[in-house]
Image 1 (cartoon, rainbow, N blue to C red):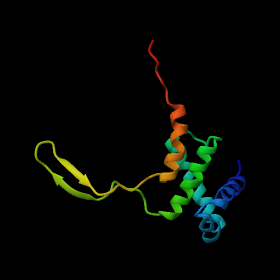
Image 2: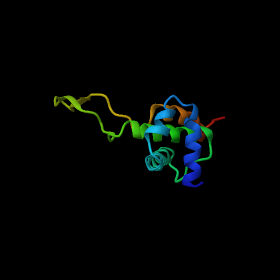
Image 3: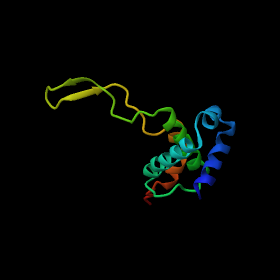
Image 4: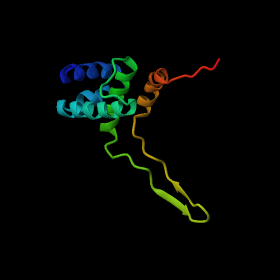
Length: 123
């Protein structure tokens, strides 16, 4: 695939999407391409591959991740330390952890990741 083909596919995906107007009108060509490039890396990292598999679930997750990246530009972190205890082994409590993947992308990838899981059947 080429960037032009990928961008056209993303534009088609967002044509009927609730955030479609934002994707098409608020983001210029270069911003959309950049979001797709970084989202591809995120999806590839999650799947443990070096390419985007040709699966509707994975491609949809890719596009959702691209939109998520431009909607949430802050870097993911481990949340803020809320409390810490040093008695014995110790413990820490954090406030909400920011997400790495878009919630919709995570849901879309679940069936794909489940199909890759190795199942051992003992007989």
